[in-house]
Length: 157
Image 1 (tube, rainbow, N blue to C red):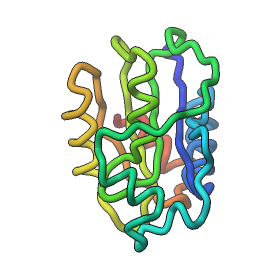
Image 2 (image 1 turned 180 degrees about the vertical axis):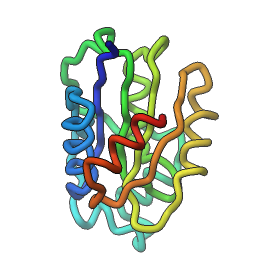
Image 3 (image 1 turned 120 degrees about the vertical axis):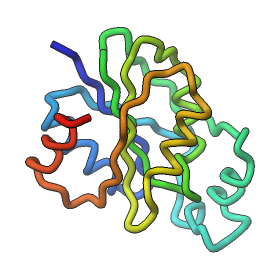
């Protein structure tokens, strides 16, 4: 039987709640991707071109530091990676995480939270940025999906 890890970055708590629900459904372990410096409300103001998140997302090469926490991903076959969509793609802190470990031989399934942005561009960006990893189709969630919905999505991934 495959062992599953549900990883996530959550700036406001929405993605955290979704990740917790997914972990329950798949009976997987949960791991939070935490930036070394937590994002404040001002940092997340996407309308302010000088806010931290805006500045980070303008430079696709930027990698914010993450809190280094021990996790042995060799124990997992499937790794779900959750995040809010920022500027149509995964926040750069997710790239920091993806580049901090070797995901070779793992199946990666992205999921994002967004009230309106679609997943396709974001998913294509991850596949293009990390072409050596095995990606399965991801899902955009809004945070109110029930257990049956999540089970069906995972079963069909």
